[in-house]
Amino acid sequence: MDVIYEYRMSLLAGTLVTVQLALASVLLAIFLGLIGARAKLSKSRVAHRMAGGYTTLVRGVPDLVLMLVLFYGGQQMINDLGEATGLWDYVEINQFTAGVGTIGFIFGAYMTETFRGAVLAVPRGQIEAAIAYGMSNWQVFSRVLWPQMVRYALPSFTNNWLVLIKSTALVSVIGLQDVVYNAFVAGRSVRQPFTFMIAVLIIYLILTALSDSGLRWIDRRYSAGVRRA
Amino acid sequence: MATPSETPIGDWLVLVSENYSPLDFMLVAEHFERFLWGVFVTLELTFLALVLGGILCIPLAIARAYKHPVFNAPIWFFTYCFRGTPLLVQTYMIYYGLAQFDFIRESVLWGPILSKAWWCALIAFTLNTAAYTTEFLRGAIETTPFGEVEAAKASGMNRFTMMRRIILPSAFRRALPAYSNEIIFMLHGSVIASTITLQDILGVGRWLNGRYYLAYEGFITAMILYMIIVFAITRGFNYWEHHWLGHLRPRKETLSASPKASMLGR
Image 1 (cartoon, each protein chain N blue to C red):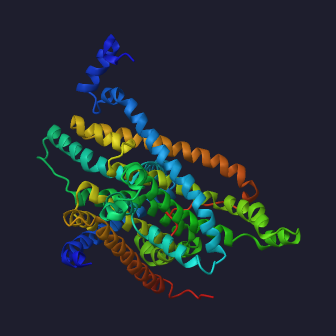
Image 2: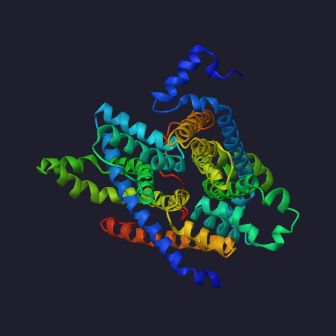
Image 3: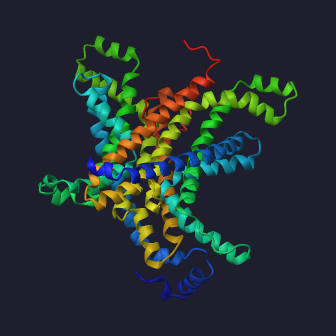
């Protein structure tokens, strides 16, 4: 246990990277999920197809493969494009960006399904009533749809978030110094990899337990108007 | 096998592939046999982990569902830990971590099993899928309609017969949609094998890219191969669900959007 204490700063720094990565990814995922849900619910056939293709792609390809494609292939593609058009010089995608991009992209597809279900759960009459009052699209969304959607989406969102946190471990494979990477390096150097992996497992359990209580708080807030049996 | 470049068309294909195509597809074709081995490794690991995990989860789920006084708590702890942490870390813990202990390195299991990446991956995947499957099979057992159990009792079945003939078959059927998701996630999770030196589909892709210093070819090929496998599995399960869940069909089943059942029992 002494070695863990000795490397506490490294583990803490790694945990911070993991948390930042997870938060940035979930924001991107929410954004993509809202767009995806909008596309899936729209009458436009093209939008519908594109959203369908998006979710199929994510379901079909493992996260690490997408991450490597984006990190290595995406970088190459941007630079090839830059060279061909002469618009920009050499660009480097760093590991954090590649990680957020991939994880956000993947969970955006899951959020699409989450939000689609949640939008459908809001009674149609309420939206009609809002339109009848002359609210703009944005007002309908922010005053009627969103506050109720959150409540319906929350159980599924909680699941997605817990899986997302665990997915962030993969960025250590492309060399981002998250908690897994730092613990792995530390474990190697003191020849106690098991001890450090156990420490990482405990850190992940703490993170999921903390987010569970956080999400419960949000649930209470957004369910304030609901009577529970 | 004749290499493609021995024919005029082959020459032309190689020329196009190397100079004009964004992907050097002929290079992939040249190493396709290796990719097929990768497919084999991926499917083998996924399949064995699912089978072993599936066998392991049955007694665990029964013990959880009926709240066995001794085993319930440790099994809960096992599933909680394995569902709450990344598979990558679990795999690292077994492959890199176990070497830390002298008594393991000196045991008979070390040489043939615990020092081998393949076995470590299999052990990690098996425990991981067993943890997830235990929890949703438990849920399925607990929600067995009481009438079915009552009828079994009334027919004079003892507990074992009732479990074997009534509760488990009925629970398996209701767990099938969740299980088809679990299979896809195990397949997705199996890419972690490539991080501990194994040559699964992604492992071969990484090898190809590393050897020829490429950015796309290996990964894109891996991506396509995974998509084909997932597509085939999904089709297979749609058929099975149609077949086995016929009696539940009128109620429209909405596919769950969430990647895995919550570790916290939501």
